[in-house]
Image 1: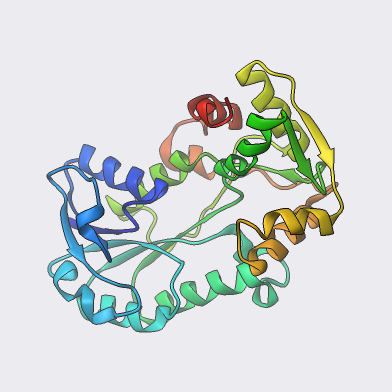
Image 2: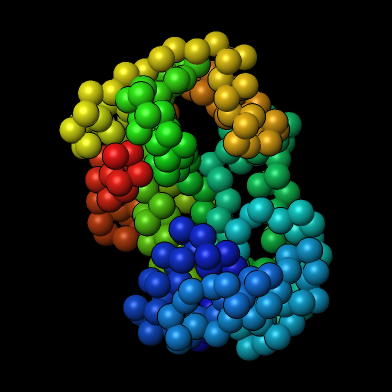
Amino acid sequence: MSVLVMGASGTIGGSVLQGLLERGVEVRATSRTPERLTLPAAVRTFAADATEPASFSDALESVERVFLYADLPEPEALLATIAGADVRHVVLLSSASTTSPGAADDYNGSRFLRVEQAVADAGLAHTFLRPCEFASNAARWSWGIKGEGAVPLPHPDAVQTPIHEQDIADVAVVALTGDTLVGAAPILTGPERLTLRQQVAIIGEVIGRPLSVVEQTEAESAAMLSAHVPDVWVRQILKGWREAVGTTPAISDEYTRITGRSPRTFRTWVAEHADLFR
């Protein structure tokens, strides 16, 4: 069996690739600049650009399964190319935002729904992985923690169920190496509900420093975030935090059901990335 991993240079894609290699699967990877990839010698790399579907022809030859990110400007054309190459199963890294009320009118939900629909319309057998907020989002606080030991936030009591990216990769590997998840769309969460304030506190405990939260207005937060991310994402981040205050998000047991293991905690993620905050 041969699997093509798109986005192999990313955290999740790289972990998926490694998990497949550990199972003895033949793995291919694509990139617009494959010469910049640092991958195991066993991985075949191909130059391909998602905006030019025809560029995937060589990479898709004799490939049975594809791991696909949903960050695609024109997914319909690429999915038609994948279907035309006789790929029999696509595992898509989507988002739990697709299941939220009003997802079709939400920037984040709608863009993921579009890719899911493109996969389905292409007639491909598929698995949609729908994770919640990534634990790695906490990395954006590193500059404040390293500097003043403080994290400025407009809605510190927003509640999340942050998931470790390796948990997402683990489920993707199961999906890519068998048929048990064909047609499935598991929602993936971390094992606990944590407010942003609690996440900051956990980081402080792990690195052994007292940290504080500085409450901001949304306008103040937007001004800071816009220096690092596009305005559309600033609005999305603030909206997500605002709407999560006082909520009780569901905790999924899908990771344990699929892998037979307990999901990793936010504290585990922080311990593994503690140098980001020191």
